[in-house]
Image (cartoon, rainbow, N blue to C red; front, side):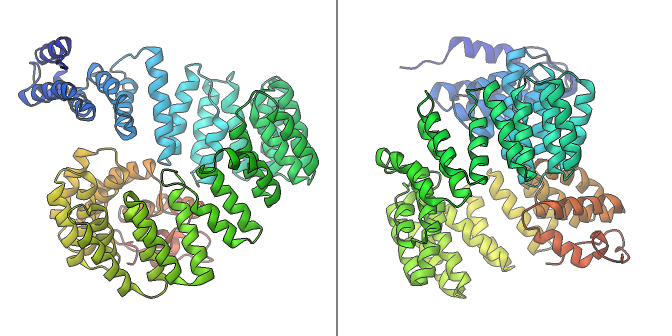
Length: 586
């Protein structure tokens, strides 16, 4: 029988009577009763195998007492859970302790934590935060591939000027570190300053001629500058410097395909496949390149060995489906998409595409029948598959049928119907149906009183659909205490303060939310607060950055409709509304 570790129990008890920072606990003694209880609960959770609860309890006490030792302990336990959100929270608390100078980490710990923070920030689209942590690693002498970060940030519409300012300051402090300078050259090109980027990459080629990343960046810039011959030459040079770096081979093949030198591209690929490399990954990568250049037959030839060996491979079948579509073989595409297994990351995307193709070819009823069959075959994906059916019915003007379908599903799955209740609640929110929203969110809150996502959904909906702002504030403050770094909760809390005519309290919350997740709705909320505080220039700059992002921005568009002066593209400026106004129309 598994026993509670005597060492762990002694640790918890000894921590109870150890001295703690007075500023954190507002007392001169050791842990208070609540914190001691939390530590003991953590150790007993370990005893029962509940690593998630154990890590959360250690982290909560570590946060309260600003103890790097407890935060480390939480991190060690969290590693066993595989819970990325929990690991990110540990890393963020670790960074606060270290960056504030309150603790000194060991070098290996610093590297692992900051790499975790880079990945976490990138996943949520906080590119300034990701770059900040990456530059801290570079300052410590770690080698990173900044190029992929810059490319992803640009594609997702990050604030490139802000990233450039970060890089410029870092380069000034570390002029002998080449990789940030390569990243800045790529960023310069992404900002539309092609000539400046070419001049900078030429300088880097002269200073660090043996550095492969310089030649990769040079090839990428040349390729996007419609100079494929130079792009190929730079890729070839990089191959000679780093023959095992497949990025150069990909760049060379992509350029050969751009030049329509397909036989050479095929030969290049074949020579690579004869080397000791991951053949599966290479075939998938080159198939994607061929499909980008609308060469479906060549992509299919590249995938054929994988399809024979991995007939149920999700990525393989998805790419074969796309190739069939490019050949206008709709039935073949449907067959491939249907072969994507339920456990694949591309399962839902494949089913959505099949439903769309069926609707186009055979009508909505065929698409609905397909989705109903998929719900029976993959019950763990019931909610998202049902949501696809609801979208099809809504688009066809059959919202009443969609509502009836959802009501039946909610009743049939009760009480195991949390995701369906969320779907029905958000449909009610979209219609501004406060009663329908409350019916389902109240049920969810009764089931999960300490779930920050439920509290946030309920609180924000009360703010949007009613004037019960104080009630909403209470829910959102609870949500914030449970998940202090959740950008959606920060946004909801800030927006509710704004509705309570407290823009000064709203501003720091919305600024942090926008740094963590610079999406359209948060940007519009922040702009409204800036207008209320008479920070007109900042509001306009924020709107301009939002308009430059590639994705749709309906909330910013709605705000501009009520405040045309925010759009610098306007021929003439209108007078901005008085402070406290500036709310986008609903």
